Length: 125
Image (cartoon, rainbow, N blue to C red; front, side):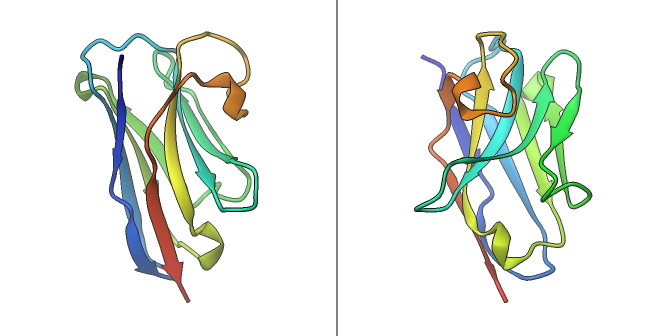
């Protein structure tokens, strides 16, 4: 069973930056897309960004567009989320997710069948 391992979370002041990483535990992990979601207790898991593994196409939630950048390194089986100009509303547990099903629900959590364990991002004011 492939595992997704996130890293890079932490605490940062408003206006600061963080870079999250997500690495698959196996080489040549065949999947269609990798996304980042975030979750705050009491709220639904929220889509943040997605990148097509073959196409490189990227999509972002409106709330992070222009501040966050998703990228990938195929050779390292890794996806990154560069987060800039962070604000307290970005505080959440961030999860990476992979889609091996090939559906069209890239913006929904149900479209992903592999999930990492999450990494906490806390932005202080």
